[in-house]
Amino acid sequence: MTGARGRHDIDERTTMTARRLAGYELALPEAWVAIPSDLADVDVWARQEAERLVAAAPDRADVELRAASAPGEPAEDVDPVALLASGLAAVAGTAAGAGVRGLEAAALVRRPELGRVDAMVTLAAQQDLSRDAFVADLQGLVSGPEAVEHLLAQEVDAVVDAGEVRGLHLMLGHLEPDLGEGVAHLEERVALGVFPPGCADMIEVTAVANGVGAFDDMPQDVVDVLGGLAVDLEGTA
Image (cartoon, rainbow, N blue to C red):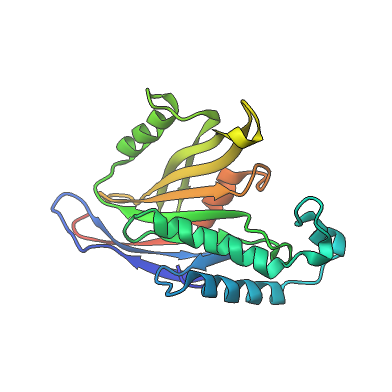
């Protein structure tokens, strides 16, 4: 993903039994910002991108800017460019720190003038990972012996032009000792796999919201993003 449209290529491999994923492109909807994967200086890029986004945003009332400020911080002291740059740099850092070869990332910035990143999404091609194996791995996260703490685990089943979409909509609880005993931070995320027809490979998609309530229907919104996904297949059908 670069700008509104990008391309990712994976290693060239063919078999006699199935087609292989040669690459994919994702046309990002409005308000999504592609995170370059080859940044020489993350902070410089994040600052420049934040300046561009805030400059292009329509003027809003001061009360809206005040909503983005920290408790007790005067609205006039809020720098939306600095806040947004920090958020974009955090997304870039998370993607780089994942250690996944070829990982692509994007950030959702609906209101740049508030200095807030609303969500992030990552995509990565996975070779030889079937739909059933992927779904079983996800189910193990919420029902296996090493299941994570969760308040919601809802199956997602959809179809986009690139193929079948399967996965989970999750509401996770992360304990925050600094906030008090038993206090948890809620995280909303969607973990999906896109399975092109007749292909042995898939694309793994993970979206994480910046707080509960960032979406009215997060699974559907992420599936809508995947409506812009196009795959290149090669090999024997």
